[in-house]
Amino acid sequence: MSAYSPAAGVTGIIKSVSVCNVNGAKIAFSIFLDDDGAVFDENTALYFEAELSKGQTFEREVWWPMNNLSGNLGVQVDTAQGASFTFHGAEVTP
Image (cartoon, rainbow, N blue to C red; front, side, top):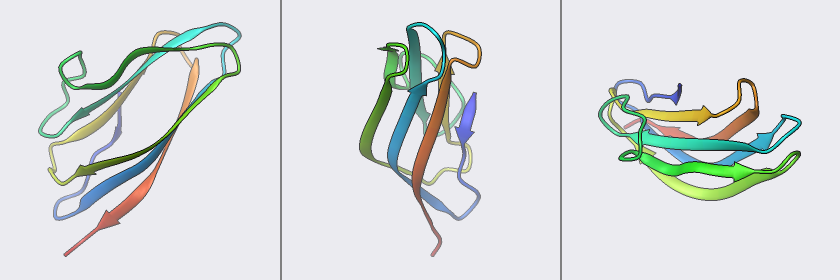
């Protein structure tokens, strides 16, 4: 599922990511960055099937610039409604 795609003429900069396990058991999540499409697989994975225990939160400071209208930041979790994804960043226009 796409979580973010920059608008035309905009550079989006993802600066932090948080993933919270809101399920009652262990989950596996993935985060993808496809700069020119929406292919979410091992080739575009930044984190692939990373495991989180019940109640655990994954937090990282990152620097992921995106400036392609066709680009997508994607997320996936192996359990329906098993995780909450939060991204913080900025959008820059010339």
